[in-house]
Amino acid sequence: MAYAAPLFFLEVRYVIELILLVFALIVLGVALVHAITQRSDAFPAIGTLPKAGWIAILAVCLVLTLFGFGPISLFGLVGIAAALIYLLDVRVGLRDLSDGRGSW
Figure 1 (cartoon, rainbow, N blue to C red):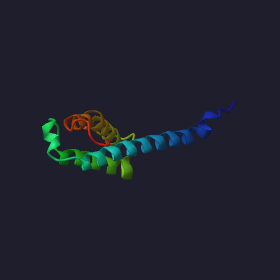
Figure 2 (cartoon, rainbow, N blue to C red):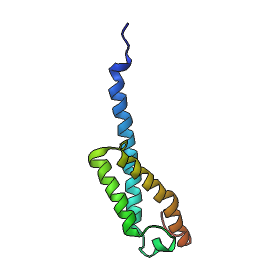
Figure 3 (spheres, rainbow, N blue to C red):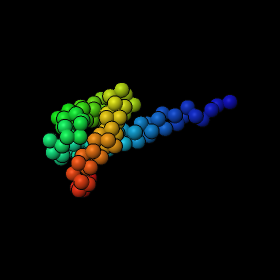
Figure 4 (cartoon, rainbow, N blue to C red):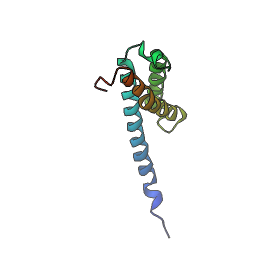
């Protein structure tokens, strides 16, 4: 009796990894662009890493995710976690610091 699962296993895995890669690149890209467009003096005011630190972390993880390791690697997962921490914690603190003004 032959099973059909091995016939399309690699295609399903490819599609899932492609979806995760697109998600990782979007999240990392949005976080990096937001970090670049913020004022440098606002980061120490909310008690977080300096602007250059966030940009370095996000840029290195974006490059490593895009050009080598993929979203399921250690660098990809660390990059997604760093971008989500930035977007869910630091961005909110920066927005609260500026009284909620801004398009982000």
